[in-house]
Image (tube, rainbow, N blue to C red; front, side, top):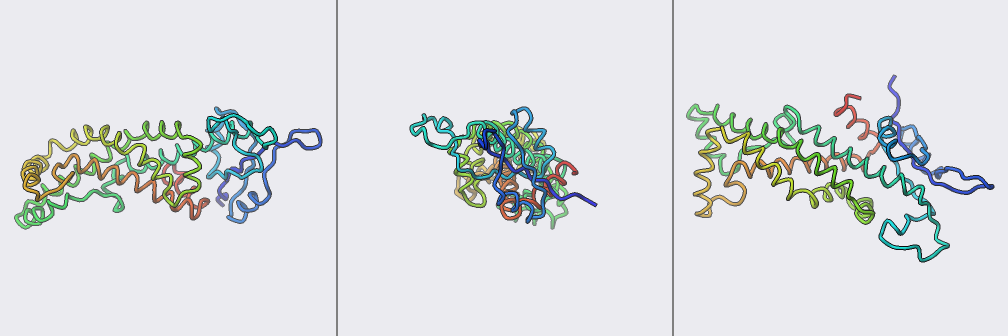
Length: 287
């Protein structure tokens, strides 16, 4: 019999009858239970313990509280001394949120950066550039389908080889996330996390991944032939943008696949956080 998913419920600090206590609203604990998960109320922890906490959990519920996030996290001072604040809560829940986002991004990279991560996944499999489709049909009719298949395989293998290089930049982006960014993510739509990552990382990742994609596809004869013809066609206005170069096309589709994977998991997580968290863990870590 498998256990239900475990969801961490963050706690606040309050003075009660002369003693400091850790507490969480019952409505949060009940919500986790009603979702079919086991609530685990966690007290403030040191930052080096947060990874161990996430290792035993399938999800995190960051609770609301009468106390506010300390103004120092917005670069401000305390102007109202009567304001309810809980800096000890902030000191561990903000890093916990960053670490949870980091693991989500790493999960997407792990799902794609493996054999058949792109080629075997219809959601992100990279097809031929549109301008090459008619040529490919003709080549298949002439018995040259092997060259077409070789290019499709090479493009997707290039994406699988390149996408792990996104890990460091995604992680660093999470580590630098501000409280303002976090609030936008919490209050945003179904793909607020994905939009945040894409806005911060797409341009630098394209520059980082392009050389890897180039090395993986430059030995494919059809890719070189396509680039030569498409480059001329672009000058005549017949082929547009990134489709005029196989390497730039694959790099763009690799990033599309990465953000699409993050977006799909984010949508499911917002709709059913308990089931989705458990499913991701099983696919990535075999749990």
